[in-house]
Every structure is written in structure tokens, then in C-alpha cells.
Amino acid sequence: MSERRRLAAARAPDETDRRLINALQGEFPLSERPFAEVGAALGLAEDEVIARLQAMLDDRVLTRFGPMYQIERMGGAFCLAAIAVPEADWARVVEAVNAFPEVAHNYRREHRLNMWFVLATETPGGIADVGRRIEAATGLKVHLFPKEKEYFVEMRLEA
Image (cartoon, rainbow, N blue to C red; front, side):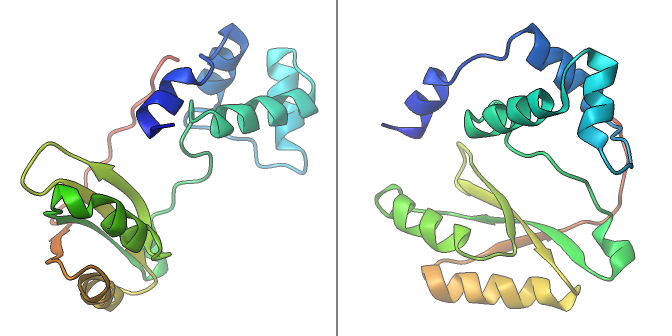
């Protein structure tokens, strides 16, 4: 089954899922049992909160659930990168790029540079190194787009 068809077949979030998503945006309790706290605020049991989050991740309703770090404050680096991938080579290049643990996420775009991904490394110098290793693995030029200026925009989406 194609990825697009699989995503279309995934269940849609129900009203409880939407309330859970909305409650978790921007804040998460720092406690021994944070899922129990979230559940109590929504009238749900701790195990239901965990099960619903896992089901939404499995169904790709959510693509990620976890903390956001300011990696630069910890000595690391992020960088947006792109590759022009020939259509006939798409599957091989996706597999090669996604095999790198430094690749945070990967997007297909309708553009000459049709594969975009984010690199996250422990040191700023690691970005160029990973870029070179991806070039060696794919045989394609990796274009690196380092962050020039950081903006913080808190965006909350009503699910």
C-alpha cells in the first residue's frame, strides 16, 4: 500500500483525541506521572492517554510526540538540507538518507530540490561531515541551508 493511501486509510482523530492534542500543545507536566495528570484534567485514565497517543502515532495522525530542544544551547546544531533526486532513484535515496541517525525528518517537495530534510548533530562541525557522508552514500549533491537568524513563534493548532 502506498504511503499516501495508508495515511488516507488511517483513522481520523475523534473528539477526545482532539481535546488531548489541544491540551498537550506547548505544555507538558513535569512530574512522576505526567500522563496521569493530563488524563485527570481531561477526565481520562492514565493508560487511555498513553494508548490514544500511541494509536495516533501508529496511525500517523501525529508524526512525533516529544520535547523540543534548543540544540545550540547544548553545543549542537540543526541545518535544513535539500537534494535534487531523480524520480527513478527516489526510493533508494530516501532509504539512504533516512538511514542516517542525524536526519530528523524528511519531506518530498514539488521543486527541482525535491527532497528536504533536517540534520541535527552534536556539534556545529558535524553538519558538514554528515552532508559529505550523505553525498557519498547517495552520489548526489547535498545543499545545506544553515540558520541565519532564529525566530520563535509559538503556534498552537486546534485539532
